[in-house]
Length: 489
Image (tube, rainbow, N blue to C red; front, top):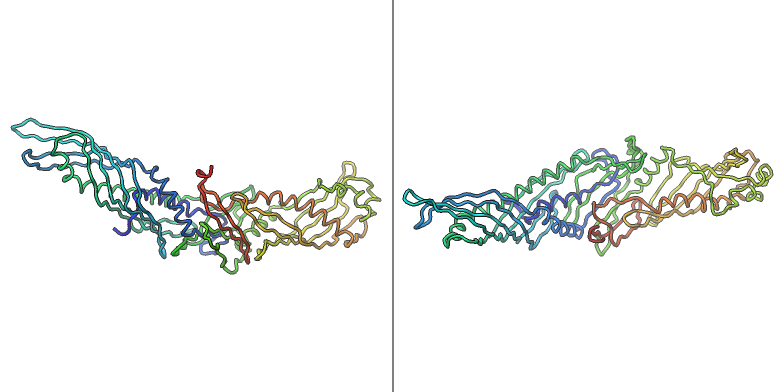
């Protein structure tokens, strides 16, 4: 019946595909290119398979089989009615298993498995000359050479992956029965009468269980949300943009990946992905590779800019003199003359969506700012000047736990006077003060958030292990092994 896989394969498939197809983010139309992709290597597929088989063997046991009845003519005894009931598979042993990928389908297979069954037996016989004779007891059955296999197809439909059962089958090579109690002829009679039926019952129960779990798995995927809120203003869409791509040694899942406003406004019109990433995880092979296009970061910046969240008041800074007019008296003498020894704060506002680009070395950003200088005169806040800034930053991403994090560094900036109520300002002299404000006031605030990072799309219940990260043209690539959280505690 096609291909074969292990007795525990129904639960294996359910858990395996649930982990394999964990979605990530962004609102997308079907057939649009994705901005985040995850590639599970052969090493990763084997890891999931082994982990899930161990978990699945306990999740499907015990498995109850239907009762079996049969009448058989026994020499010297006559016609005997026999029945088996309470047939339960209570343990499974696994010899070998594998997972393979084809052009369009995923194959899960286990061979040489064993299963231990318990059951009750009873029989009765009699004639018009003799009274009815009956007996009952228990028996155990060892199922050997159990093979179960299934092939599934993974198809994207409307942003959801549909799980289609293409082929499913199971086969039992041999069984042995141990009868507790009963007459001496009972063992041979039970074996002859029920060997085929027990094999068939095991095969049918396994195949039925697989079909039920595939249907349940498909229903779960159909009900997955297409958007997941990440804050009060931003959401991440979880729609798949195409069917999973299967190769000889990996499975790739691609999603759109762009941040969107919680109102549902799509960012697709603003971005073009450009060329596909050719980067891959180097040797030794890692279990999973996650690639994020630079537009993922740009879309997040755009959402927060459109929501008017990119503005701050700096009223505390390590260089305390910056927030008092006395610290400015040699740079802007007229400021100190008009407001001697008054406190100050700085209102910084991003004036256009930050431009983010990923190079082979780091993540670069260009941010346009307006910085308004405010004097705190008694209880009054007095704006006295506004400086426009174009700052260029760089950031090399890092992995913190399961988060993508980083720290922004100031590369350079340009400053120009927008307006002033304290006369003309010498921007050349002003450069040093601006550098101090940006390095000790503005960037530390941003880095406090960036150091925490944001979660990478990982299968639920797993964590990164020995992760590596690098940048290439337009892409950030994370290569990592995985570990089960329950095993790391």
